[in-house]
Image 1: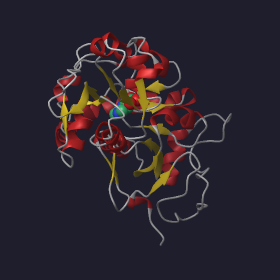
Image 2 (image 1 turned 180 degrees about the horizontal axis):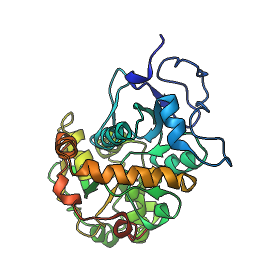
Image 3 (image 1 turned 90 degrees about the vertical axis):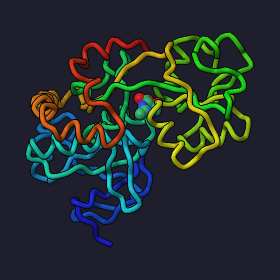
Length: 297
Ligand code: 6CS
């Protein structure tokens, strides 16, 4: 099956097999493609490269509503949809999604496996020191998924710290893991899981007492699984947000992107995209990357 870029084929990152089709001119098979950003060390002209090849390679997670890969390989979700709209304003026809775990996103970006991250990779000091974030597209909150009725009363990180028997499922390298680590929650209380569904499985199997994930991600999971409750936003977890993340070498692209993003944010389409995915576009008004990059962790 020969796909075309406009169908936004999806490749799996980190060397996993190609999920999409053979894309004209690209090697396929089990290696992630090497096409795309300029060779490492070369002066970066990512914008011209992306315009000439017709797409930008984006690292995503497939965690609705932040990112979503449909059955036929279409890459959507709040952040890829905003990225695609701004790329079109820059003269880049489309985005090519590569699914990868959160912990691999920045290493993969800096290894030139993809050219940008648009996945709801929340801004915090340690990440902002490794990449160039665009101005934020979303600001969001964290919640706990718990068994019905929240039998152990887990609503804050302080609750977890106060009871050493509590076990919290988190994604390795994810923002929630960082929140627990910053609060000195011991590793013995952290249950590492790979994605939303395995977090819910950990609850059902009593391997965890709660599962920490962004509030909207848990609400998306609840549409297909009514077995758990979702806490109110965790008031002792930092509120932060995210936008596209670029390599430091791609500062020219980052500057051009931010300029177009600022203009796009003033159009009705920006609010339409955010609302479609359950975000409130007014929450991010006036919020800056500089401010969110002060988030501890
Ligand atoms: O930024 C992160 O690491 C977190 N972001 C999202 C959208 N989901 C979980 C992940 O840990």
